Image 1 (cartoon, rainbow, N blue to C red):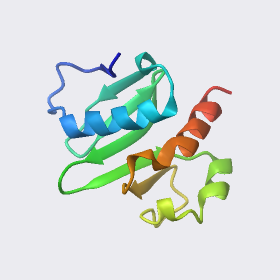
Image 2: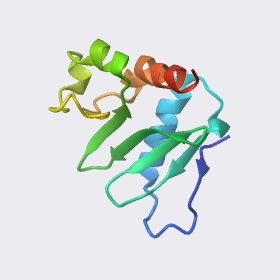
Image 3: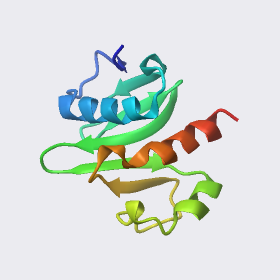
Length: 119
């Protein structure tokens, strides 16, 4: 099953490349896709939600490829020096940016986000 699309009357146009990139990432997690939703809250990025909360933001076009992931306090300590997050200059933010080179680089981090949210 594919990712559910929410906000069907949204004024912002869905970006197929972002949906496909998000689907690749979610496939790598091995979690039922029906638990995820794709939303387009603005022109700048798409949002993937897991069980109703914002799981990650993604921009995946010819001009820009990045993902933004919410980081708990513990995750910030673990990943502060991880080169995946070199694009995030302000490590005090809640959501960290990573320029995407490989869509499958995020499995461990996103599974931690799910674990944190399910506590």
